[in-house]
Structure formats: C-alpha cells, structure tokens
Image (cartoon, one colour):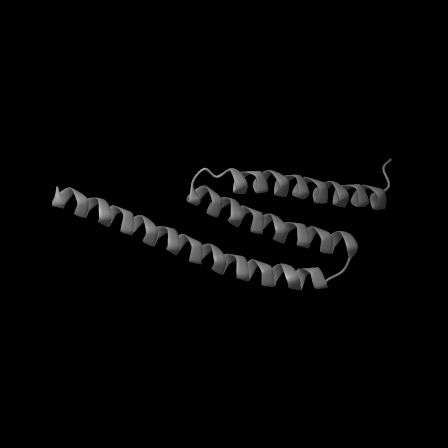
Length: 106
C-alpha cells in the first residue's frame, strides 16, 4: 500500500512540474504570436498559470504567504488584461475608421 505522505509529496511535485511545463509552452505562444490578440490571451493564461503555481507551491510547502502573493498577482493581472484588451479594441476601431475614410476619399 502506498504511504499517504509520499503520495502527497509526489503529487505536489508533479503538479508544480506540469504547471512549469505549461508556463514554458505559453511563453512560446507569447513570443510566437502571430497576432496581438494571441499575445494578450497568452499573457492572460500565463498569469493564470503563475497564480496556480503559487497556490500549488503554497500547498506543497505549507507557506501561506504565497497565497497573498497569488491574490495580489491575480488582481493586477486581471487589470492588465482588461487594459490590453481595451487598447486592442481602440487600435482596431481606428484601423476600421481609417479604411472607411480611405474608401470614401477614393
């Protein structure tokens, strides 16, 4: 029969490893793009993975201060994602407006 403490130790390490692998893959998507919207989504997913990593690390080590950092990081990441999405919306709106003006001028 498997020892419970050993199983929890292994599970915690496996969870941290899977989250790190996910972060590496998301960083590749963040760098590769190809569009700005893809990068914003990748950045949001990376933020989610960082928060999940901090929570898993807190559970694994028993250190509760990681939870405070995770909550603060999640709030800041949410605001950053909203700001980037609004910026992309404005850029897209300006592009459509310029194309419409060019068509009417021709």
